[in-house]
Amino acid sequence: YVVRIEEDMPWMNKTGVTLSQILGDPTTCTDVIYTADNRFPTDKTLFVTASWESLSHIVKTFPIFNQTCAAFFQISTEVYRGNRDGSTSGDFGLHPVWARLPASAIAMSYFTAASYFLYMDTDAILTSPNYTPTSMYKTLAYDGYGENATFQTIEPSLIVNKPFYGWLCNNCMDHGLGHGCFNSGALLWWRSEGASLVLKAWWESQHQNKTQNFHLEKHGYLHGWSKKNNEPDYVDKMSEQNRLMYIFHTNPDVKKVMWPVPRQISRSNSSSCPEADGEEHTPCLQRDFKPHVTWNSSGPSCFIDHHTDFKHLVRNVSEIILSMYPH
Image (cartoon, rainbow, N blue to C red; front, side, top):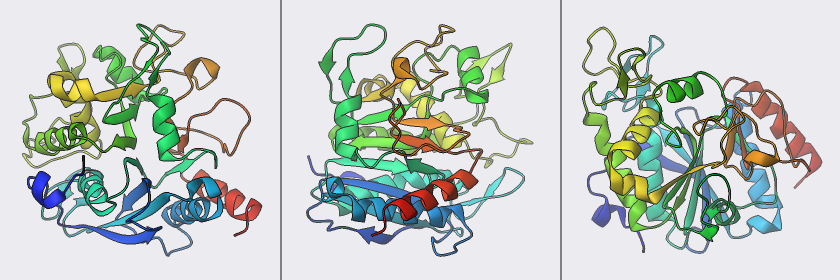
């Protein structure tokens, strides 16, 4: 199944998202790692630059990535813009976090030979030189862990990871979201009709009103989609993440082709949040809010560390990678 954006995704407006840097041959690579940001990765003081440099170095240096391409998408602030007060402006009235959707669509169109596509936020970084998007997918798509395991290999169109702990965990548990609680900082796609289905439902969900959200009288609306000061165009920086969770719970076709990991219940009996990345909750796609550096560890870890609140660690990990493995 080959996704042709012009034919299969005419509903996706790709204005303001440009494929600006590529590593590898787009006609032959079998998987792709890509990221997107409104800052260009040339300023050495930015964690964005450190993130792209380390990813580029890994793909160029380790033979296991010989069939992996890397891509950087530039986001236009004229189209996508998030303001400091939380409001949005720009042509679309969308926060830049939404640009990962057209970036995903463009990646599937441009890298014609690839089957697996790994999106990572620019404050996320690989934890090992031993796993490609293809091997990550094959590992995570085995339903052999947690409750109601079938011990079979499945074929999800999108693999997402749950938050490990923190405010999002608490919100999800309050609203009873179970396995349908995600951190969208890492997305692992398999090229399929299901991928197009998810992207379409997700993109169109931006037009939903504020009442189309999880709501409990005691807890109010789930963070990310409530309006601010009655402004109809207010879209929070967590809005695309909220929308992905919402369509997972309200659209049976979307839920059928998505696979949240890890599957194991936490020690406090939560299916929304693993709370630990030890042996009982690996394999996993990403570990969010990681407070320290992990690189090529012999212990259990996720494939990606997402340093949401510790962005300086991206630079620290990059320095380790570049120094230990000179190209």
